[in-house]
Image (cartoon, rainbow, N blue to C red; front, side, top):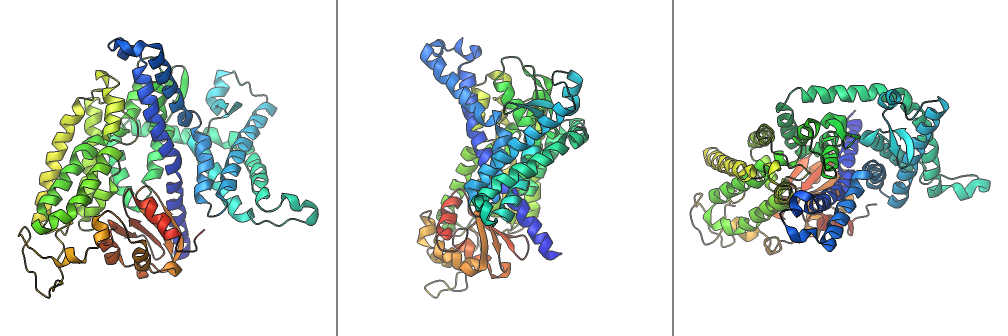
Length: 543
């Protein structure tokens, strides 16, 4: 039972991680679409005459068109990214097989509907089955859920048949060549079942979406709070994807096309000259403007509180850590480097933070802020708020952020001092420092020598990580069974989680360590996690 639970955790963690590749592309394409559509719109060009020039118009139209890449082909991108991310070897074949399987599934759906004599122009049939054009094929639009199913099936087939041996007469089709072949066969058979089950399954999803819609502004509140609470175990990506890309996050008609998912609705509206309908504005409540209260104001306020509560002699040591965390949060929309500074020392404070994030979503919804996109950072505010005009109510965001900044600052400063929380710079020093003296200085006192600071590696102060030392703290190469990373953290399957030295990893620069069970461990690094993972990978035999 324990092994099954560990395997399930590893699978869900890996699945959430695979979402990051298409989502990163989506974020970039969203910015391209936002800039291009806003600067080529009549509302902007009428006020800024030089933008009407032919050269400017061509460039901004090209940017908007490029931004549609991820939005238009999002399901197939997921169908390829999931087997790519889950495969440990021969990742290119896995991704190729994902594309083959996705196409095979939709061609099988088309075959079934055609054989049943379904009229692709009949409105009742379109509504019942959810018929749409998918990569040039009249099929059923299963959206992200269909793509995820394809990706999971293909990844399992890739794992099972990657080394498949065939009889001599068929040896050419063996090994890696067999993976796309069996993917086409299996997904073609599964595609025949989709018209039988999808109408019912899609009805359930719509019911969930309607139920959330009936909660009004409390829907975004619970969504925002839930995302934060799931973040420590890495499952927030799955929750977010459901709201962004399925009917759970809303559905409606934009410029004559039926669109599902909060982010899909928002991007479709960016490419549409008509005024947004209620379906679009309601769905956008689940997007980035809800995060801006905490990301642009709250967490920077918490960082300032942690800085002011640190021992004076430790402030220079933690300043770089806090500043880099604030920059990652405000500019990149990456919050883990700051959140994990207090998650482990005061989990209840993290719960309060989750509630405040939810209240940020609720406030933006009540005030009618309409900015959208994915990250909640200052770039989203500028591109999708300021550049889109006053209808987005972008001017309310600095006011909300200022309120959240003050709330976080005073709450965190009170909590840290009242409960003596060991946030950065407040850790108890060792009994003897490097000079053999006892350091009994109270928090806030000046001191020339600090044992904890002396032990801190100079490479860490310079923003570098000692990969060899980190590997040793993880338990050595022999303790690591698999190694990967997401945006901010190393994700590992280890032979024994007890061999992972959490305290030493933190001294070496890790923000936090999460032991999900006896085998699944996450080490929170921050934005530089990719370089740390690459360095570790060169020292261990991991595929």
